[in-house]
Length: 195
Ligand SMILES: [Fe+2]
Ligand SMILES: [Fe+2]
Image (cartoon, rainbow, N blue to C red; front, top):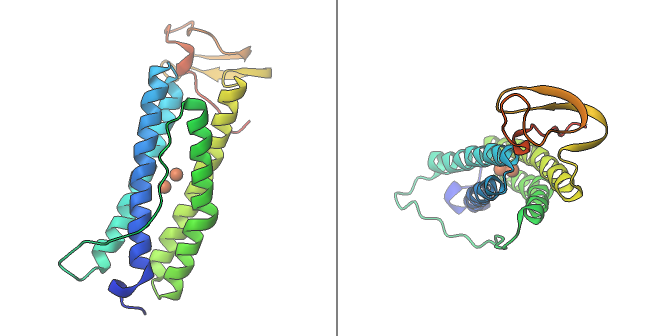
């Protein structure tokens, strides 16, 4: 096993930690943006994704804490992270691309390096987080697509819509503007990805 303090895995964990923190922060920005645009359910989804990212950040952080012997816990890294001003429709799609890159490239390569360096547990974390990021990518891409095509609450064929506030359900082509039961606006209607 490679000495952790000299390993590439140490730096990769720090990079991954930084990336997850930033993903989480950006999702909270999007969540706020969505809420201001009366897209309450999108806001809820983004908050949930942000929570996932913070959980990933914590796992990477913990691996560092568990393996780093030195008292000086500073790790210098060189890495690029995205900074872009964007509106809701573009930020969802951009987020999907970042997630996909993490899922298909970055984390699998970090996992391989960790395995080669003899850190099997860390490799497993990278691999499992990659699998989650793949699901995030799919959700964000679907959301961005529906947002742009304005099909979040409209469908070709009737389908079931459900209010996330009161649970009212109706089977129809287009979701209500305001919920007939609780009067909450359309933005509270649950968005289903599996269709
Ligand atoms: Fe993540
Ligand atoms: Fe993610």
